[in-house]
Length: 257
Image (tube, rainbow, N blue to C red; front, top):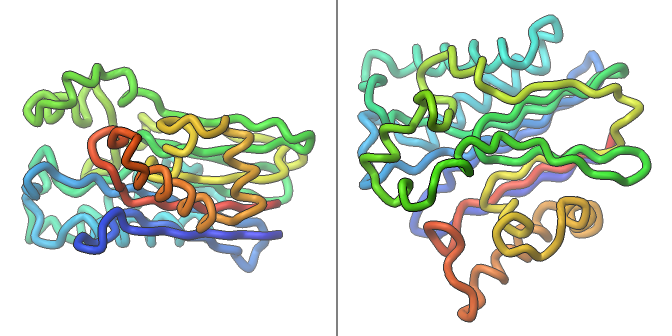
């Protein structure tokens, strides 16, 4: 088994709001977790701790439960991790704030029989079959929102964790029911990768290659190699800024099973 991961902030002046981890439980198998913390507009989120604190708390709980509670499906694990994280700052922070700290989520867990997955919001999961075919597992609800709508803070707030909008892991455990989940027989998966949108833009924003080619970069150059390619593209003055900012926190975790 080979596992490789890397994470880089979008700017040295700001803390990295991504969080990635990998675990190999004593019972066997493995776990990958990738979170992309959501930066609140104007820094307003009703929380005294901030997004990096939230992402670390949620990511740590997700990793621990995914490795230790094989009896719990991943959506229940996400619900419990959200609940526990909310309880950790309910007495000090306004969790009813629409921009309370939140994050996108990818969790992958495998044992000798199955590879399970969960995806919530716009981070990306890649599954590679033994023959080399690559499937991208996506939660595309944010992509369905018109870009002109997302330019308005007020309009975006109205769609955040709301019907007809998009969902992230924040303070409500019931959001776990909105996640894209599934499982695949272990013998049909050769490799997996989780990418926050700062790393996945190599494919979905800059169009440098398809998902299979993206996975090939991860296999050959590692997670840091893919992030380095993204940074070079972002720094090209001939290219317009990607989405809303030229540089974003970027994280990738790759595992060959």
